[in-house]
Length: 168
Image (cartoon, rainbow, N blue to C red):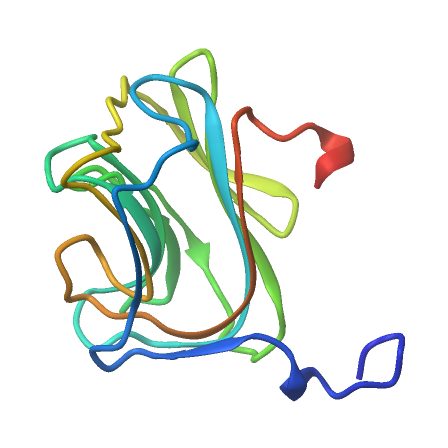
């Protein structure tokens, strides 16, 4: 239960991991190109994907380093997903409790994977994230469908900067 006495089962939108997803076509107002930014998701009841990746959220287009996203893997890791390039964490627990997962891209062109307020992995690479006509923001799938994630999403936030310690 939460601090108000409501059962956690009452919170979040279920994404079943079986060909269902939410799509925002032609997104605008989110970080593009090499702009710094972050995708933060609060999710729980994550389950192992069918296949190698289960995507929670991804936006951009289907070309190397032209997307930003978050996923889990069949080997039990959290992962960023920039389309082709990824970062993975150490093993995660399929514990059914809420987790805060973030894909942070800094002004120094560094992609970072944060889990529950702590940085877990990073790499330096230049992203060129696409948005606008022909692009999508997918929840529960990778861009173009497939690699469906099974989880319950409580919140998704997109920042136009790398979050500060106070924002975590």
